[in-house]
Length: 487
Figure 1 (tube, rainbow, N blue to C red):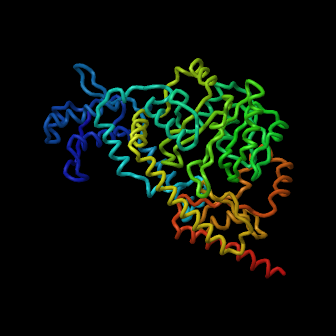
Figure 2 (cartoon, rainbow, N blue to C red):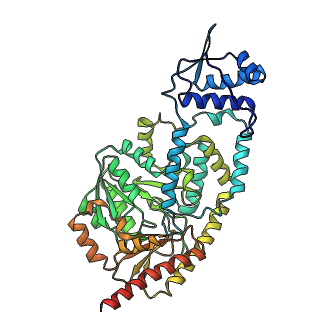
């Protein structure tokens, strides 16, 4: 049996039992007290450290609970083999390394098209609702709940979708999930594996990668400002078509009503054809009337509607929703009805209150105003630049596209501004891999004669926008100086 001597006077302020516990634990982890070693009894430990026996007992109880020691009747306390125990120290070290990497990638100005404003999040309201939910002490909040999501929240979402997007649905038509990716994976179990899905190119990389992981074959057609045409769909002959008709990412194009009706008619021609409508960035439109969803004009039960609160509230909320046609919802009950929800029930309760009490509507209207001002400010600043050849994809969403007058490539521009603390992406980064062949390069060279940059403004102040554009000015003027020197 070893003797344990601990200096309980110095160090951080903490309960005595905690200091004893931390000391013995650290000695065991370091191997200074080997496995199988017998520890002093609580009486002997208390006497040697001049503390109460209850203090020594509490320290041992904590070590017992965490598996560092074990108690053997009539024998005493012995050190356990801790090789299988989770060690926080290594995690902290890994966390430090990850933090260093994140710091290396820090951007002074981030033009990401995915970024949103987090400074104007209604923290006080969300905090109050969260407290109220927890103060209720309702036991059902600790239970799994409905696998599709809580009915009250699904009903609130149905009301919102009908009013804001014209979606024809009820609570029973909706499934909640932790992100669009999860819901798309769920679809593979409803529609079957090995399907062929058609996407516009350039397109949404997250959806593309998810479809590949689902075992789907992805075909692409060139995206255009006129939207997806039924002729392009018929040429590829898929079973599924993934569309963003109200605001295509990344081009920002809108599918005209005539083309929507034609593609719905195409889907209705065969029983197993469906359209997956991702209503990306639909909340933010700054000019003209809101454009109704494709689902709102579907009379054949052919549209699978996807939406999320990532842009309207926060990405970390991880609550997305899928509206299924009746036939697919029936299949969901048969095939996947036993699944538990992937969205924590407390989060659902908080969001339900946030919507029902009118906070979501007020927050969304406020953010529309803020984003509209940033959108207009960025457009005004771009008009002052000689290197701006053309702006497109504006008037909606949280980014726009800028065609640049320069001899630099997109890759060179993005790399040079990154060195100066500005993060942005070029359109070529969003081309899907089916065309990463000679065909793709031919397509890009014929369609995209000049670099096209995506400038997101969701998280940027006017000062940050000016700072980022000034750095772009520097990089592009450097290019002109080099050109002049060469000539």
